[in-house]
Figure 1 (cartoon, helix red, strand yellow):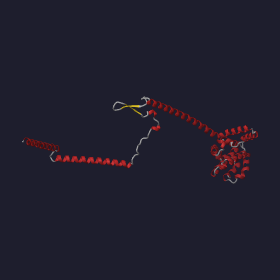
Figure 2: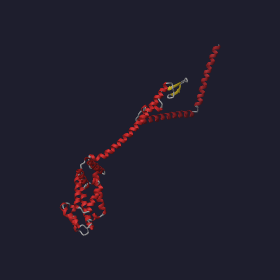
Figure 3: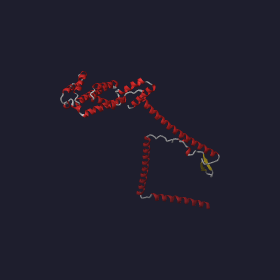
Figure 4: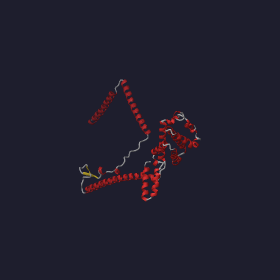
Length: 330
């Protein structure tokens, strides 16, 4: 949410424009003591670490109370366990830093102020032994908190948790001013590009219409440059009134009337018919071969038999013709 700083500048400029000097002073003081650090997570984590290393228990508790009242209390109920665990871990980290810095008074102050609050929590029962332990870094209950891995994991978890909350929290209308301004500027640029494209298309259409009207006038005057010339059967020239391909547009193109495909069962039916016709042709061919074999086996030739039958028919015809000729001569 880095744009919050930009909005703060806009508000400050507006206050100056209106001449609200007292309001401007109060606004600047509020910005200096801003606990949210303009909703910059890295600055919030840096402030928490600074308070821990400066052993400022009051400031640490005040900052966490501010985060709890403005952020954590608005979360859903199932996040309460995570918030409580992060808070307890931050307090334990405070004790670890105080011990490594030999600030025993800060450890005593910690338990003196927070004992009424922590005594009812089971996870703090062993930690009341912390001020009296000689080597807490070797104790099983405290050793893990002295490791760098545990401390880094705590800071990273807190950073991710705050980042998620800041991204999901509702923002005021003024916070959307910059994003809406960028969106409006982008839309204006897109509209300008579309207008230029539309003007170019309209100019091209006007040129095509002008060229088409000029070709029409030339055809009316007898010119044949814009028409399609073809020779007829008697050799005359026939002019086609069909427009040229350069004048065609997408609206002149008609879709092909392709019929929808038939049902897939019809395809199988056609295949079945083809197989039946092929089977019948093969059957007829087999019958012809069988008859041919029978004729050969009987001692006669079907070819010679046909030839002899033809000779007998010719003899009969020639005999009948001769008898007719004798009757005429007689």
